[in-house]
Length: 342
Image 1 (cartoon, rainbow, N blue to C red):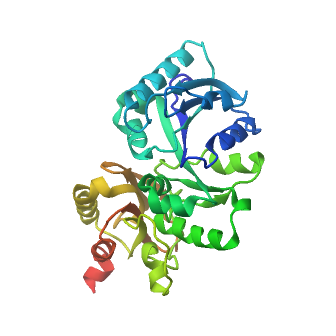
Image 2 (image 1 turned 30 degrees about the horizontal axis):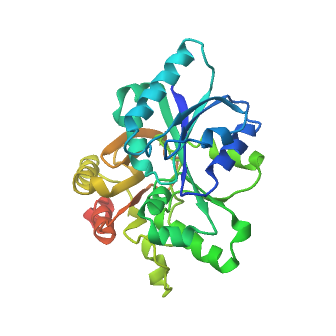
Image 3 (image 1 turned 90 degrees about the horizontal axis):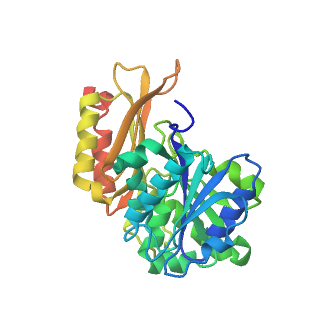
């Protein structure tokens, strides 16, 4: 595949108003990663100023205005990205990767889906990851008042906590469990220097069909969403409808049974499934089956082989709104051939 047809990696930078997205963007542009970066800015309003705040490290800057990128200018976004790719093909501009900075009011879901629904975008771009910035000083109130703030956290592949120096210890200790409660799969990072950040925030592979983004085997709390209540802790209010859970099943699974479970999951809950990813052990198959999706868009592929003597188990991370977590765990665990034979 020649350089003009190799998919361009895309980083989606999101977070509520004032979280520090442009500051982080400038740090990433200045970091010594050796890549040329194009930037798409989305400013809510007719008079855009964010483009003037982006430092000189960007190869090119495209500004979208007069609407939120997740709804009214979605067509404008696709057109802008196609134009960027065509100008790159003609040698008019040169860049190695793309960063899209959304407005603080944007729901990342429709933007993410556009990279899979739109055939042109799917061929020319590869979504690498969603980075969500969380303002440690104001996030507790934002998560309580603004539903989109919880959605931004839920879609993330990386959660970057900013302004930790202005938040008191009590607020910080309260915020982190809430973030983990909403999104069990995204690593929690604290904003630091640019040199530290870019290594964690680029080349994430968040939408790759591999094992990245999956939790370790046998987590302490399988039902992450209920961990606080299980310990008798009074969790602060936030959009409690959004939560995450790790489903587990032991041993090997029948492929047809797995297919039926996933099809039923998507058919019944697709609108409320924000992100999901799993690694499965299939009977008679030496390789791991990996799948992931956003709403109704799901992909499957076989990964590396299970190592000799390695414990073969099954883990799925679900992040969604108003999902019947206990019932889903029971159904998934019942797929185990070991349990069926017993």
